[in-house]
Length: 271
Image (cartoon, rainbow, N blue to C red; front, side):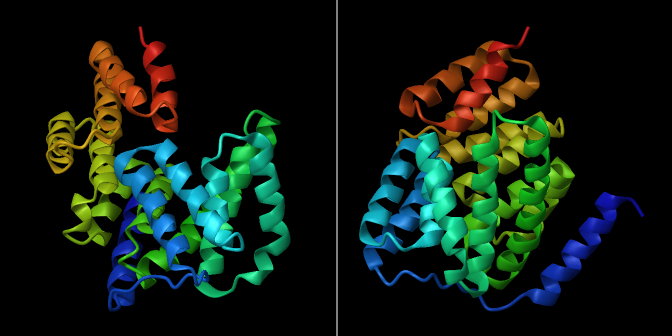
C-alpha cells in the first residue's frame, strides 16, 4: 500500500474512533482579557492574514498575563525582533515544565516551531534537523489535539499545514475534507488553504472558485487574506502580472504579512 493511501486509511479510522463531543482545549490563563486577545490574535493572522494586527493582539494578551506561556510562544513566532524571539525561546525552555496535559502538547509544538524560526539563516544542517523535529512533534501532538478538541479550528488549521509539509497537497486536502465541519470548511484560513492546495494539484478551476467564495465571505472587509490566496493561485498558474498585482495589494494592506513577503520574492523571480 502506498504511503499516502495508508495514511488516509489511518486518518479516517482515527477520526471515527476518536470522535467526541465538541469542546475546546482548556488554557491555563485565568484572565478573560488575555484569552480574548489570544483568540483575536489567531483570527487576525489566520482568517484575515493581518500579521501586524495579530502581533498587536498578542502583545495585548501578554500585558494581561505575562505567565501565559502558550500565548507567549505565539508572540515569539510572530515577532520580527530576533533578540526578542531568542529571549522568549529561552524563557519557554526554562519554564515549559510548568505546563501540563494537552496544553503542554500545544506548547511543545509552538516551541519547536519558534526554535526553527530562530535557526533560519544559520547552519543549513541544523535547520534541516530542527525542521524534521518540529514537524514530527507537530504531527503527533496536533493530531491528538485535533481529535480531542474538534472545535479548536486554529490548532486544526495548523495540523493541516503540518500534514501538507509532511505528505503533500493531496493528503492535506483530504484531511481538510474529512476532519472539518461544514462551518469550518467556510473558515477563511481553511477555505483559502484548500484553494491553494487545489492549485498546487493543478485544479485551477476549483481553486479560483474557492477563492471567489472566500472573497464573498469577506466582502467589504479590507484584509490581505483573499489577495494572498489569489496571488498564490496565479503564481501556480504562471500568471505573473496577476499574481504580482494581488500580492502587492496584500502588502499594501499589511506590509508585515510574512506569507505575502515570501510569495512576492518568488513572483519577482518568475520569468
